[in-house]
Image (cartoon, rainbow, N blue to C red; front, side, top):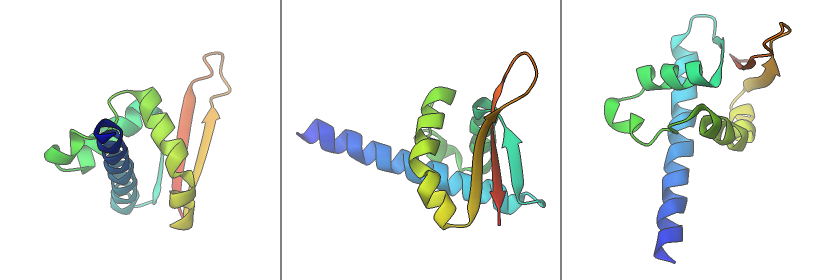
Length: 101
């Protein structure tokens, strides 16, 4: 039972850190908008958060996407529009757009 509790605490911390990082990222951006892949988002989160906090961030782009899906409602409640999509070229690269209203 203690293992489940510890894992749950780690997930909450990771979610809160991603939320904090996204808010900071948009606040630091003059346009209050960010667009890129999950890999680029992870890199941007690493650059805006303290080094100690980055240890708890999701390590892979796919896990970062799962975390972002869990945070969609919390982000929208804070006035952030989040859009997931794919580029129209033949590569169909996945991207995310974050915009502060």
